[in-house]
Length: 176
Image: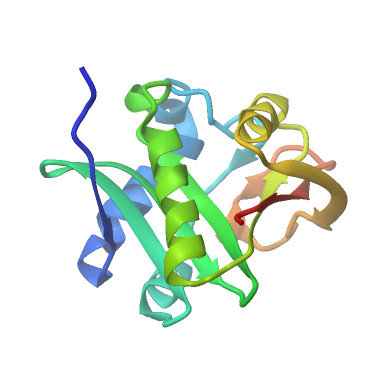
């Protein structure tokens, strides 16, 4: 049976539930129940409250929530960058990962970028050593670019690295 999911834009009342979801999907022991954990690479927080609050207030950005009834199942960040949309902060509750919720949210994010914002492309960055996660995006039409960005070492708003070799790779997908 397919879970009934509704999508909506987050507002400032969703700040703490969204922050808690993102943390649970990427950091600490709770994240190990899913396959998106970064707990072996990073400690500390995954999202800073002030950065999230600013994101929720922006006119060129949206945090999209996937809910079933009153349960927050997943979220993502979208930023309208003109011809492209940036996709990030993609989080699914660890115990719900592998049930298709993430794929459905990704499809909704692509729809928003294409139909509401008229973007031609979706872009995202992924830690390049996350081979399983990269493979998941590649199966959904994203392409590795070979373009890399450094991890923000020294800025604990994005976590405390456990390794010296973290970097992001830019992925792209045409939306036309």
